[in-house]
Length: 263
Ligand SMILES: NC(=O)c1ccc[n+]([C@@H]2O[C@H](COP(=O)([O-])OP(=O)(O)OC[C@H]3O[C@@H](n4cnc5c(N)ncnc54)[C@H](OP(=O)(O)O)[C@@H]3O)[C@@H](O)[C@H]2O)c1
Image (cartoon, rainbow, N blue to C red; front, top):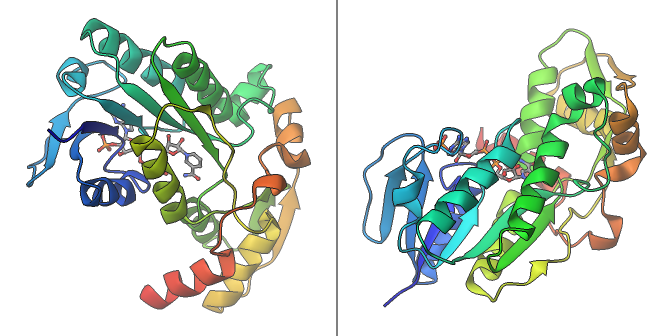
């Protein structure tokens, strides 16, 4: 009997690239979504919400592996806790695979200001610890920012008449490359915290914004602002980067050219 893998966040940017690869590998895929959807052969949808816990018991019943990708700007620690509690309550012990972010353990989120600016990093770290201390066999992969996310950011900012960017650098990675690595980890044995995955090059936010504006032929002044607080300083100092794990192949320039050509 084929393994059943529950993919939380299977409808998202990353998850929608992961599920076809899992199907191709011959596993049964169950996707958790807050919206009820029709399934297809070998792909089942279960409606549930990791913020409220509704539907999670049914989602985790009978699964061999859980690939936990569901995420939002806030509250990922709590989502992980609700997921792990539901797994224990269902009496199953699946391999739990988690996607975190590079720098989750390095960016100190201490003050109220830090929490406003970097709540996401603190929540990812909280979720990492929930997974690690779950008592389940686990694997966690930390990735740098996806090309898709940075494209959303630069295109939104690029609509402004004057474009402010923070003094951060990014090491963007192709979402499909993260998806492929996660599938490998999901089909493999539990491995704990594995090597991080980062894109091939590092850019300032200003460089990313300028390259986008230039590529679409829009002229706008772009200026850098300092993000406030200790957490933002750690981020600006490169806390979100992993140059020693620059294993991604597709560059931002290649991604951008393909994205704009397809638009
Ligand atoms: N984007 C990046 O640059 C980046 C970098 C490193 C790590 N990550 C991590 O990778 C994961 C996926 O990111 P993404 O960019 O693909 O996200 P995304 O496109 O925003 O998708 C978010 C997914 O989470 C699900 N979700 C959100 N809240 C939920 C809730 N309360 N209950 C159940 N499901 C919920 C959504 O499902 P429905 O809407 O169908 O309910 C959706 O499938 C996240 O954990 C993120 O932190 C992202």
